[in-house]
Image 1 (tube, rainbow, N blue to C red):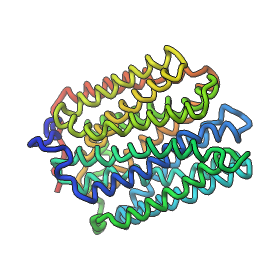
Image 2 (tube, one colour):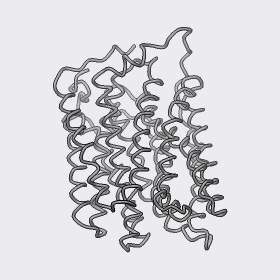
Image 3 (cartoon, rainbow, N blue to C red):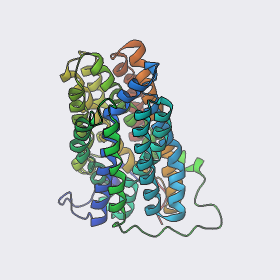
Image 4 (cartoon, one colour):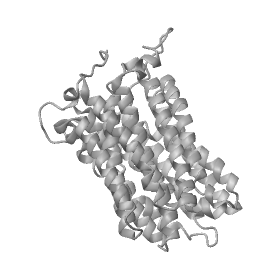
Length: 408
């Protein structure tokens, strides 16, 4: 499929053609990302509070992403056998257990307990990353990019709720800082499970006796697959690199937790607000230009990051990185949906998320390590090689006609 083939045909209101189930998936994404926003605001600070070696402050958060990577395969295969609903409910259960586990770890002062609970939270993340693919299945092909955008855009709600919940619950249990935050977080997966029950998912396809579709190696060798995965890895990895270090650096620079929560709040706005028009931008300008804009915005984030440590600098870094992530992530997701046949869907999604969140886990840990050893400026500078790789990938994507298998 050519880049032009991803463009929507007649121009109508951008919400046209999106059914109720896509909207409910957007609500699910909003709830899931509220949890993520709270974790972003608090995790590194909880790690610094519990760890004796402060260079390990972001290690539990990195383990969440490593678990997300591993769980993505398990959840995708579970959904292949039982359908989307069961997989999403299992993910919500992981979020409930993980949140309560972190609250207990704070009470017990256990860094190892925090690591274990963070690993369980990865199951919740892995399921949450599949809402966008579920939306693509439930939407007509001509509005698929818009459906993906809307569901990812549902996360804008988390920009309001997540940091506000964190700010108002941080001292709810006196000396046990952030314990109230994670207890409040435990309510999110319960609400999520309720919404999931109202979505009309298609039945899980019957499994064939033989191989399902082409070998993974053949799917992964496609140009579109490589570029889609790189967009996910560099968009997510770069965004997490600066985002994870931000609360640590802001506190180290004398800024308050309220300032840090404010920056994270606007970072999340930057991540999700563009989703309400990213699909339309793809339809009008094509994937290559939208992904190029994502790289350019992240490059500007590097400039903002190395020119000062005022609240404004941190704000610009995180907003620009958030919008850049959105353009790369939505673009990469839309591109990924063109590389597989229906029977290849689950294994392709699984390997994509496995690769993407492996890089995210590495970025999360590297962020704390870089900040502890070399200071804040080393974090945005570390983005530069990745952005150069993404530019080369976009040029490769644009260089020749793209083809995909027939979608039966």
